View 1 (cartoon, rainbow, N blue to C red):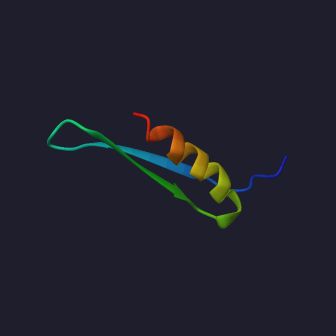
View 2 (view 1 turned 120 degrees about the horizontal axis):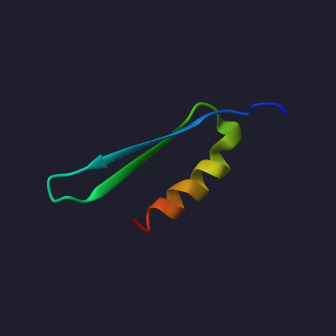
Length: 44
């Protein structure tokens, strides 16, 4: 198995107690996967 990259999800809470997410990738090869994660996290 070959590693394609790493996705990092950072979780924040703002002053109004809303949860915010930041999804970062270290390579463009895994951008489609990061988009799925971002779209899913928008529901929270």
